[in-house]
Length: 226
Ligand code: CTP
Ligand code: MG
Image (cartoon, rainbow, N blue to C red; front, side, top):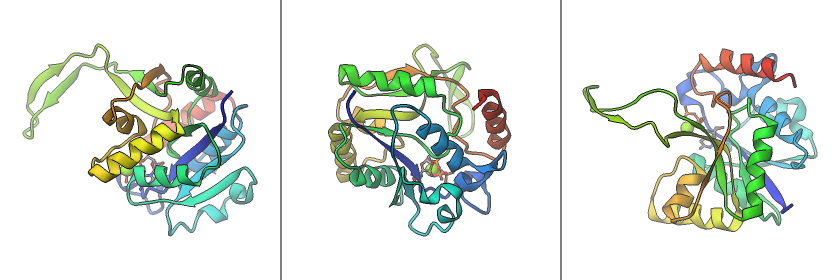
């Protein structure tokens, strides 16, 4: 298998969570969201090291039990998620592929990561995603429906996202130079005309974003028996 470097962006401030500390440091079953995420990733048989991207003013990571783990390298992040991901990738040693996973997604399943990693065989990157279930509407600024968007072939993008390192670096750099804002790695690859595969994951791989997501994440972690 090709060499893989794992980058976990954890430098956000979690504005939508409206908590006193960034959401990656809130606790689920007595352990921080970030520790759940990192422990889950490192338990995968193909992952041996993780680059964790932290806010330059982060004071909390050093207080965690895993802070001194020899399988973690910390890297200072940037203003936008893509800046943090870029910083993480630039810190990695000789890797052929980069797996990026949000600190805020502690419920990712190991089997889904395995399925995503299989993409390296065909040299085409991709992302975990889940098919949209609800009927989708496009509204206007007055919250009036303008259109029903066909649900067929619509997916929720998740992480991990997995791409050849050089392709991802070039794509993120081009977007930065062109001032194109991207909220995930796939968008940067798409901007370059690259192919991105959709690997079906689970609805339980939620991104903790709003306060009610914490209880849901605790429920899914309980179910996973890990
Ligand atoms: N992230 C990051 N650097 C940034 C912004 C986000 O490393 N400048 C990370 C977050 O820590 C999170 C992941 O990217 O693990 C996904 O971002 P998101 O869910 O949007 O987190 P926040 O930006 O922290 O939340 P919000 O958008 O509500 O402020
Ligand atoms: Mg954000």
